[in-house]
Length: 274
Length: 68
Image (cartoon, rainbow over all chains, first blue to last red; front, side, top):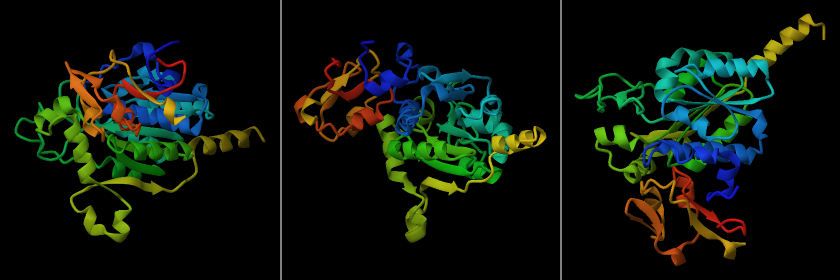
């Protein structure tokens, strides 16, 4: 096929589905590319990779990517992914969800998948808002920020998704942003290598709704905000004062524990007298 | 080979968000009529910032013989 795109795009994308429907400047496209680069770097067989998503802007991503893909019901991506992983534990199962999809509609699925430590790599594209439905506030909209359903400012406190996942039992947890794309790629690679539940939060940007409602400027300004207001979690060791009022990025937790499908297989083997 | 590198575009996919223009260290790119154009290709140092940040896969560094 003679498509006008990079070799990486041609190899991993359903190019006939492009351009995607995301708004100009949306961070999701950049984050989707970090997922592709991470898979390419690890050299995974395309036929052994499954991408599962729920509903929302972020959940459009698997539709554009040429792997085994499943676009499921709102918030239930992890439930479907758990079924896929248990049916065929050899597959690399990746779930792409949004902030609302993962922590509101699918919040219970998230904490229980993390608790089980099933070998699924969960990537959350967090744009702080429900973009697809018109800019309603989500569980990660910061306190005081505006949304179409919070015209006087949001009075709910936001979830720290990484702390939530770690508290629930995820064995690999990290966060990067659309601006910090190389770090995001590295975290996804490590998450894919981790035999257990990996949770990677990618801070995305929504210039159309969140950005406009909160006067954050255009996509370049929102990227620059991440550049100026995020620090690697490693600074806490030597210069904790540098982390004041900053968003922490990097690898927060990496502590492998017994994996769910392996523990399940042990029981099956026991009754088959292996 | 470095000499074969070329900055290429798929204008049909470009939405003119300007992220590539904002992060190009050499002012190679410009937005004209809501699309990115490679206005100053001689200045390009092939750092890959535009390709890394473009949300639409619309700009990339190519150079293989089969790429236009």
